[in-house]
Amino acid sequence: MTWIPLGRDCGACGAATCEKFLLHVHAGEKSFSDCPHSAMKESAQSESRTYSETDVVGHQYDFVLRPFPGEPSARKFIVPFRADLVERWNIMPGDLVIGRPAGPGCPLYHALRVLSSNPITGVLECHVVGPLAARRETSHDVQAYHVHAFEGLADVIHREPTLGMRQRFLPGYCMINLSHTAIVNMVLQKREGTHVRLEDIRIL
Image (cartoon, rainbow, N blue to C red):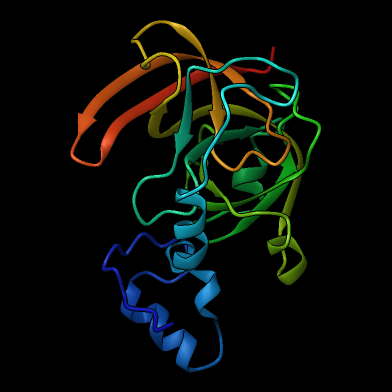
């Protein structure tokens, strides 16, 4: 599969632009897997995945939160329990962060590719990239973090996302198939689907 620069220049790979990323790849300093948008095969498989109407403990959920086109997962905004670590460790776009979403109460460690970082607030915008990434490269282990928000496309199962309502949703590709609850604080109808932002994430 030939990787073609998408022109996003998102910096998630650690390079300022897609063209500079390609130069790093050709120099042997990076691999195509360092680009979160290169997982086209995985994305195609996961986008075709079907979901049941209930999670692992039998809760019905209103919708599945899927990624935006060309992205490996829904966007996740986190704040480490020690928010000062973002500044202290100089966590930047492209870095890998690992830790457990202990704020909502999830029992699993996650590996997260940083898309943007704020050294003042400690908020990190990330993609969940799966546990194997942490075995291939150096990561920042923040151990525990709060989930500030999710953003993605809602695939309606029982009820459409409704502004201001606490709803139960399933993050796409959740490793333990456990639904979350959140306040819907943004709903935008776009060409690619229903873009939602979810905050106050809790597993109930």
